[in-house]
Amino acid sequence: MDFSGKVALVTGSSSGIGAAIAKELAGAGAAVAVHYRGNEAGAQEVADAIREAGGTCALFQADVSDVAQAAELVKRVQESLGGLDILVNNAGTTRDTLLMTMSEDAWDTVIATNLKSVYAVTRAALRGMVRKRWGRIINITSVVGLTGQAGQTNYAASKAGIVGFTKSLAREVASRNITVNAVAPGFIPTALTGLLNDEQRDEIIRGTPMGRMGTPEEVAWAVAFLAAERSSFITGQVVTVDGGLVMM
Image 1 (tube, rainbow, N blue to C red):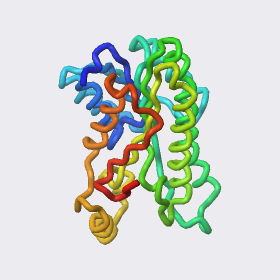
Image 2: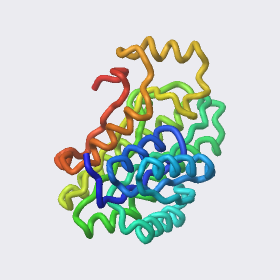
Image 3: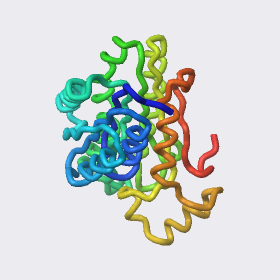
């Protein structure tokens, strides 16, 4: 895959899956906007790794759950890197607890960070893609958005919402040569899964046909595949990268 001449924005790319996606796209030639909200040190590490490998990138800070900040982020990326061709909506968080004990703040924070941010950044990015009549939008959802998970009603709702958003927007912009797809990772060792205990990890692995957890790099490869020029006839799809955990 060759993304030379393309500009990519990966939200929440200071660590984990987002960092792997940023490195994958940069390694294939894209100029990458490495975005962070609070983890500046992590974002700088990602940028340093990209540059050491010969790639091009720039750092951008914003709270993408805020519509005004999301719009300003897209504007800064376009001005700094010369456009925006590939958008990966990856920013996410968790506030896990049973619904009966879930606070309004825990609900609102997860929905805003995981779902509202997808609306805010994508809306800001669309105009330029429509004008070019080319674009790739890849939204990072989760297998939890497909199956549900006890203690994660807020997270599951946000990730299921991304699936519906993806399919609806794909219908809206297909005629403009813009594809919109989602990638649903299974259980990947990241900061968001770091709170699992050994028993929970063992149970997940037993339920995964491939008998292991995945890696951020395996998710990043799926994103790059969907962003490629030759994937132009794939839109409105949810690609699960989960070792067979969810078979649809």
